[in-house]
Length: 98
Image 1: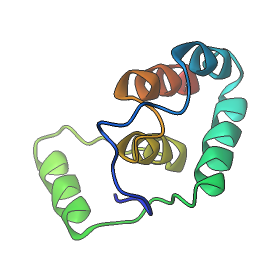
Image 2: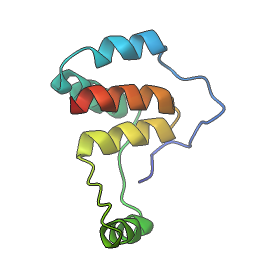
Image 3: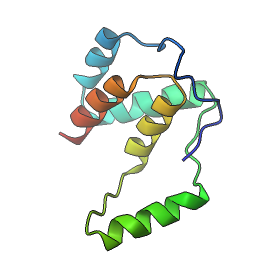
Image 4: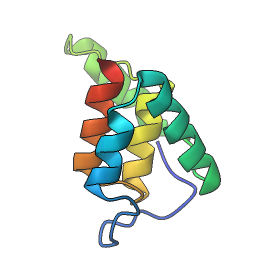
């Protein structure tokens, strides 16, 4: 997966942890809507990379298949773009999957 923006590991996240907690306390649908809206506003989209197929094949062979849905993939992409931190992504993903 790739982003339309460069990864910003050294940048400060655009959202505070408190803002993310507020979003995470909504319904899974609210979290999905926020992720889609945030990505759209910033021109970020999930793109398949050649190694995605390889990683999925390795995962399948090791009996550790992890299929992420589009919202989970979008949360990862927002993290890679520096929009949210990995901690914030984890919070959102946990609450999205509940």
